[in-house]
Length: 363
Image (cartoon, rainbow, N blue to C red):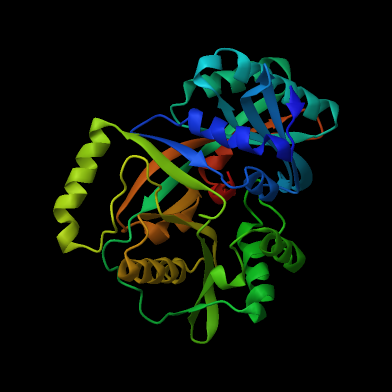
């Protein structure tokens, strides 16, 4: 196993195509033209580890480092994910690679780490459990609900709110709102003005102009950003299951009556935006609802996007802002682990009422 370099870019892109995610829709993540663009924004620094056989890359896994707030302390946390293995090389390779990089993280002095596993991915959960018997202690910090909101109909915008695009003058108040919103969340990043500026500066296609601000009586009530990351990552459909084909057929039937965009074919990419950094002032859920409904109504007019990705921890009441919207969903397990006694893991029962910060636009 070795660290990948830019010379491996083409092989890594080919690996993505050869190792699709299988489910209702079989699809792969296309990170062309630069595989390393996404890992570079997932944390403060990163490594892409690869395994090869006869000069051909057979698998990869991404390691990133983040600063997070956890159980009252700030920690440098280790994250691992994006494990991809060619079908012909599957077996124990993924387990061996995961074990090696997690062991390295422990040896390098990281106190704790985080990873996400789609509900139903029993193989990866077995890897997590196995590593928990050898290298770390871990807990499942609840599940995240990942929604695909369909902007095909007009949604009612709560009265009394004005929604506008953010400007440079809003960076400081937005950072304060984010810091206040997420101060009580597990695994939240730092949200000072400088931290927010750094995220904006390093993220392709993402700027202060991606933020929307809802105002009520001249004061900011909520904020949120919407990000089209199509230039660095796309989801390409390889095959529809019979269930997915039925959904597509149904959408074609109702297409004349709703603002449904051109439906994807096998071999084409989905078009979507990510909802990022939703936050309210004094729990003004209607303010956040105004932002998301307004954005969805705007997308309805251009008929380009199939959905908006939105992720919330199951204990996060911000999800109430999309309660009445048309959407599909899936669940993701959130795992936190510790390497030493510096960290006291939070009892999973606590997370029924205490939300965990999630940003699946960079997962």
